[in-house]
Image (tube, rainbow, N blue to C red):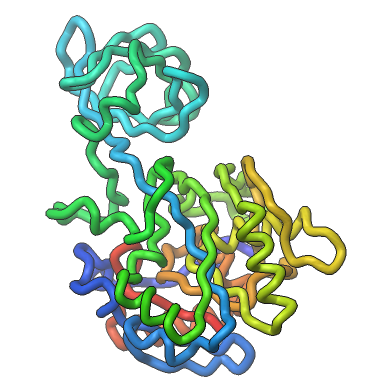
Length: 340
């Protein structure tokens, strides 16, 4: 299995630059992974493919306004800082944009705290220390970071948040959940669809293409996740009653499958909290997920490898070609796929 096995050509005009309105007006490609059959619909008709007793598992992470603009001291040179992961109080792993951000260099965030570069990591990554808790300033001075393939400006930052986002910590949105509206969630509950929550704080490495020739040589990113005892109980009870566990997004898939690794005999999952580095490639045996809702992913990414593990590489690539031929919208603000 080679990384090139997960490559495909996408016309640039199919990369969605803005979200559709309303959220659930996005198109929905429904894929039968056993037979390879494909149906076309819209997300607001999701109920057509669900059954009473099914459990939708949502990732309640919230994107933090992690992009900061700063100036180096004393020169005043402009730099950009993207918060990736808090290491300790006041210390963050970041990506920097701008020249000369070497260890020892001091900076000041515009209308925010000062700081200094502590350590140079790989590439543009740095470890920086702020003079005050930078989290306190983010609502006022932070900007929501959009993926680099989105060049249009976002008028409403909340459109890059799910309507159920609660726990701040992500550098990127769990985009499969962007299609849900409060009205759609309520209508699904009214017909007997159940909901449960997990949290996985998404890192930017999620979207990075795999550069190694062989996927198994790729070092998977580590992300913090949590699956509570109440969610574990809901998942295990749904399974016992014959309902399906439907993960909303690859982040929910990783959390559920990570939790499956700790399950007791007779259960699907157990409660977990902490880092996960689960790398799901074709050949992986899924233990907790029966179906998933997802978007269309970048070529050669760990995400297209994950959905290929679930449905089969050829089935997924065929579905992607069908989506391209029918002018579906791709990536974060694009259309959705339901894999049954």
